Image 1: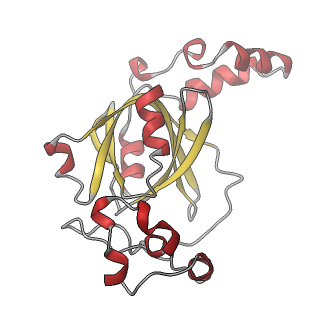
Image 2: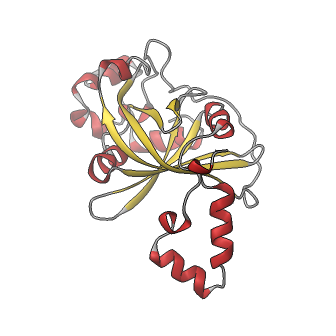
Image 3: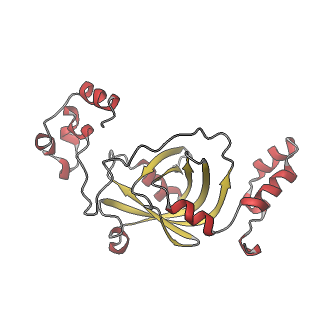
Amino acid sequence: MSDDNMMDPDEFYTKTQRKLQEENEALKLGDAVVGAIVRKSLEAPHIEFIEKLDYFFLSTVSSKGEPTVSYKGGPVGFVKILDETTLMFPNYDGNGMFFSMGNVQESKKLGMLFIDMETPQRIRVQGTASITTKERAMEVYPGANMVVVVEIDSVFYNCARYIHGFKRVGTSKYVPDEQGNQPFPAWKRIELLQDVLVPKDQGRAEQEGGTITQDDYNRLVSEGDS
């Protein structure tokens, strides 16, 4: 580890975080934790951990200051490490809200929580992001509608003591294959949504078993098929 990759605590923490540390007699501890785990760029253990995972949690904030967290899943290693300060991940077909992607375009800042619930272990990445649809990036992710490129501001291991142990069951059938194909999701068959689906999905419901009611969809979700 290079000293150049270590983070200055005063650069890492906000004034309010510092104030709370002071009030709780944790200033020295806060400094020590930053020195021990927070880095400006990825190191070998971070890369190895991220590349073996097939999901993470994405935190973004809107221009109104409203935060949200979403789950992002894909094949193992779908978060690609471009270099020690840059990574990227795809945005796949969703529900049309573009909630997280809109936030990324507005505020640029995001947080990524990589977590292995079997070990357990977790890593946090804070970064400044941009969205691209350039061919070179899109070719890496068949089935994606855009790609997020993240310039890393900080990365650090996070205490895992409150992580409950869970076993991985399998990969979602909706993860696009190597050609970008994926099953038609049940929610796009809901009768009330047929007139507002995006053009490429118009008429697909009839080809995929016909339309369903909201109650039908709720039943499918309860059975693990959405």
